[in-house]
Amino acid sequence: MKGPITEVEGVLSAPHVLEYPYRRSVGPVLSRFFSALRERRILGVKTAAGRVLVPPSEADPETGAAVSDEFVEVGPGGVVTAWSWVTRPREKQPLAQPFGWALIRLDGADTALLHAVDAGEIGHMRTGMRVRPRWRAETVGEIGDIACFEPERAGGAR
Amino acid sequence: MSEPEETKPVKSIKAPMRLEYQYTAGQATSRYLRGIGQGRILGQRCPSCRKVYVPPRGSCPRCAVATTEEVQLSDKGTVTTFAIVRVPSENISVPLPFASVHILLDGADIPFFSVVQGCPLEQVRIGMRVRAEWVPREDLAPTATSIRWFVPIDEPDVPFEKLEAAL
Image 1 (cartoon, rainbow over the protein chains, first blue to last red):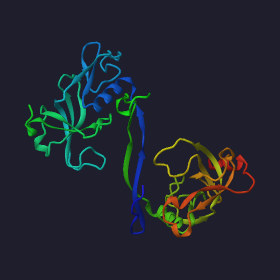
Image 2 (cartoon, one colour; image 1 turned 90 degrees about the vertical axis):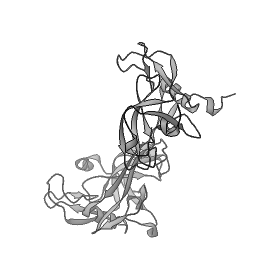
Image 3 (cartoon, chains in turn blue, red; image 1 turned 60 degrees about the horizontal axis):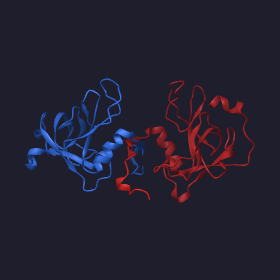
Image 4 (spheres, rainbow over the protein chains, first blue to last red; image 1 turned 180 degrees about the horizontal axis):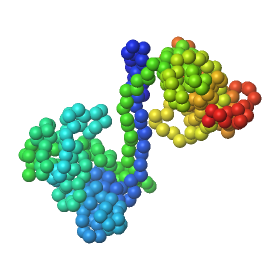
């Protein structure tokens, strides 16, 4: 990356960005998940035991067995099961203002999805809080189609 | 007729890795970078084993002593190993394909990482003689990109035995 070269007492210093612009194939199960996000729907997949995995995976993490071919729509709302607060977001993070990274168990799901919560301030975050997705105006089939989650109560929904 | 893009199943996603550093070169490498900014390649010699390091890091990793003697090196050297890069990537600025190479500069004891361009790539080989192609004088700056790449020169190959010690 180009950036200003600075000098302190004869020693040079400059920004250095190491970036791998990867694109990765998602496989058949996540393909369903990402294709549904483009339509503003969130899909989980059922395991043989009937648990709903969101995000879906090709194998049941508990048994290693292949999941079923049954996909179910979950959410859009859910519950924060764990979180941490980002005081100073970095450039490529989902929100420019301080936000929470949270594990969110969507309604109808048995596992939690990692996403950003735009709670405004740390005092508004708590385990067990209800959140709902805020969708981007343009969806393309990636996790960023959900710009972030936001507290349900703040917007007066439900 | 093919399906429109917005209804095709998603097959792949962007998954970039990005690490933002502030790189501080240290005394020795700063001198080297300033040399590069003047079109000169500077190394440092170990006072104990006499090996010449480029770019210099200020110490000899073998003898664990400070290196202070500065040595100006030739911008000619010999390819010690290489790989041909043909896969495009948005952050590669050198035209494809090119050879990613290690070059043992004349007078140095460790190879130096760079790129070979300007010749049919099937000609790139271990022992091949090359020379730095610098950016125009007015564009020289204390950064690695002041050397655009290396190009072959018409000199006989260096036999492998003479390179072996530096690999």
